[in-house]
Length: 160
Image (tube, rainbow, N blue to C red; front, side, top):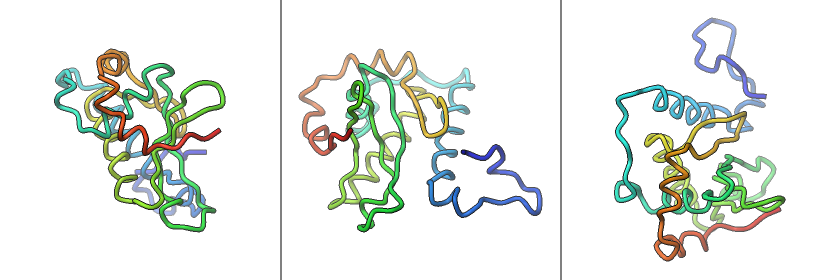
């Protein structure tokens, strides 16, 4: 469970080891980013041309379900397998995991693309490690040319 006060400055309260092994600080930071941007009425509307390739690929992959999660595997043997990854729910029981174990830099580029989507009000936090497209996110996702993101989508691996 994600603790309520990760940024609490009170003495004696800190993150537990279990929180760190679940990637909670990063997930909370992204959730806060989504919240801050969504509550800012002065945020500019995003155009597709202003988004990086990885962000557009995530947006396109999520265009049908709108469901995105951040997942890690603390028990994986290889470091690249333990990295947090962006996972898009495709339909019942299938998801596309943007984790490239042999190319950790690319995995981080997908996480950064997700952060970019959060900054642009295209993603909103739902529960725990679950996020979704915002209404503007759905609108833009449906405008993406599939060929423009095909190579990056191939980097994702389908899991159940």
